[in-house]
Image (cartoon, one colour):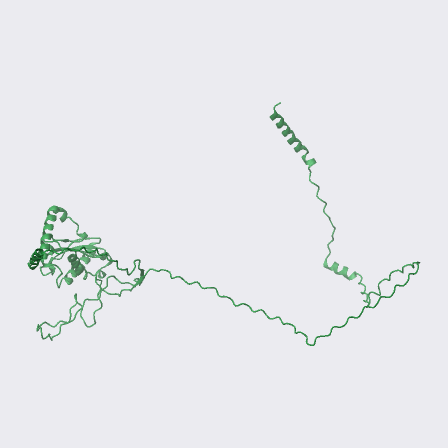
Length: 398
């Protein structure tokens, strides 16, 4: 037979025998019988009657003084008949020990001294290291003012009338060296203004300075060693003296700059198509006539600031302040605007009523700030005689 079949048969037979005889051979021991006691229930009345019918306990016997006497005496031992023994000699008495003499002064008992508690040692305090904190500057809260201008102005005295520019008071008495007769003028100062609209939500801000407020001056470049210069001959020195004595011709710097600017403007005008210049949106900063030399960035910025001083956004409504208007104006040779030439070129960002309100505010700003003349270079009149200014909530563009 196959070995695998034999092993399988033996395993199956063992399993069947285990199932049949397992409970008999390996039965668990029977549990011990539980002790059962019969009890009877009684009421409290029956218990009281049972206690009352029980006999009284006998009195406790009196205790004797000598309990050893009351003990049962042991029976007498029978007499032994033995030969009498010789009495042992009495023991010799032990010699009496001599008493030691007491000392005259008894030693004093040492009183235990309480141990002194050691003083607590304070822990070493750690020295706090300074934490590097960025330098900060406190920005003061601006004072509320009814007028908003790019350049803040202090409040004028109470007795001084409001004017666009500061005018010093001229007294009737003139200096003796310069007898110039001038009309008496009262002192005037511009109205108080701030660079932003101050509301109740405006609070003092403490902005941390991210950059250091001061820095060390950079070291200068080391000087190169000067090479010895050979002394020229007498003829060379004489010729150099003659050249130095000859005066250099004076060059008109302004005329040169104007000529260069005119040449650049002519080249730019010829290169750029005329249609692109006409269709350029005015909202990107207005326009200036290209008939003359171009204005420098400083001159354009001075003109923009001069008009922006009178552009008061606080007087506009919310919709009007969000509206952008482009205003065209003609300027005379004296720098003053022509009031009849002021017109609204275009508007965006609001309704017609809002655009009209913004235009009126822009017109007032041009007339008020241009009453004394705008700071424009007279030699470039052909450039700035026709201007287009852009007015919005951020300021004035040119």
